[in-house]
Length: 209
Ligand SMILES: [Fe+2]
Image (cartoon, rainbow, N blue to C red; front, side, top):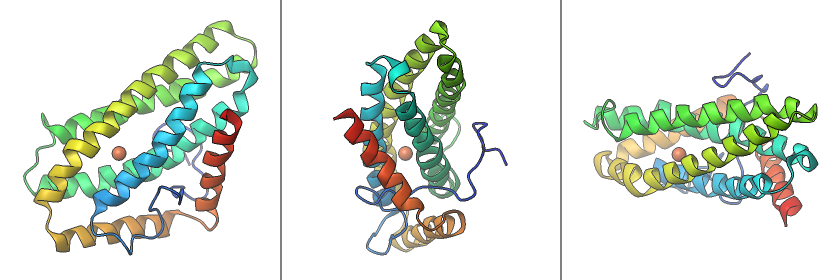
């Protein structure tokens, strides 16, 4: 089965890095935006790794590039963006926050833009493995574009969109949305997936230290 960005979908979907994430256990949380904000902190850790990778000779670190891209495909997009696009944003629309021409529409466009950068990086990797010089430049350029986009995007969500969500969605409804997050994860995630992605983040940080 293929996912939206055209790479093979894993048998189980994959959010869940516990150190800064809330994936898998939302029982201590009051609001869905708390879960999403914590996931942003985890995503930022891997963006820092990507920045370091983009400043080094890429042919020496292709395994780390692949691990980072795997994280962005599965943790950042399939899990985190799914929660925003399928659970939080529709709830905000029900409370009068417009999709078209408003902040939700902008966030959705930026998610799509991010997917194009990840797709381009994934396509460049096998060409870099075959010593294609142009592909190295594409890989680094797309990584820089993705870094810029996602860091600013995360800031907009944390500082603007999530504050709106916290205001317009009632406390009771927030609990319902948190349960929807849990249901998504219970349905899609497999045992050991949290640990797998935690290991990937920590392995990448160790490799970059
Ligand atoms: Fe987000």
